Length: 284
Image (cartoon, rainbow, N blue to C red):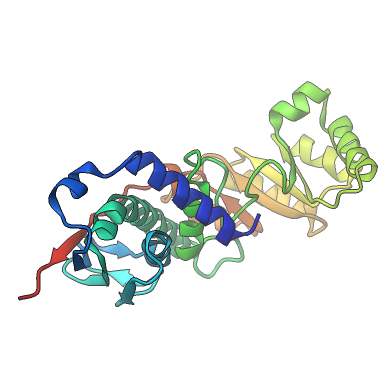
């Protein structure tokens, strides 16, 4: 399903979760016809993400709102700056406020951490990938935030790549039968999907090279010296991906091995939300 449709579903479900049968705080204190203006205030340094999502949330509730952006997704931000202003029914502003902030604070934290990782890799061949270590029902925007921060998206779910990890291999009886069965499955079901296989040692890498029939070899929990040896063994025949034990402090050492991709769950699950606020503007 395309991004726009998935985003509409996310917004619909999130608003329903928050509003339920009604926003009684707003309904009890603000007239239905009241119109107003609010601004998104930046309170912490980082990379801004979620401006486009905020506009979509407000327009989902009220299509005719006026939304003026002062910054774009991916822009650096500093305390005291404004990201956007919105003119809408006050009911719309108040009902959308928390969802807008939750999305933008989380996305900005992920984009900021992602960019820190990417900067450590500058000048190297490797690209930074995210993983499926995401928040249930929020993966769409967490992965979008990684992209805004300069990273790249790995598979979105279990359906857009065959990824033979350690448990698949162990349950199947080994690397060779796992690869063979995966290829037979694709042929039988007339599917065209890349196959990635996880390796846990250089011997595993050698076995994959004997079997072939994959797109990418994951080098899981290898140290940088082992990654470099594996890259030499593979010699460009398949894409390579380093994973496991990679931090902001050591990612450059991994990137310098010549590996094609480095995947990190930390850029999402260890990111801290940044401080933003949506404030009413009362014009006299």
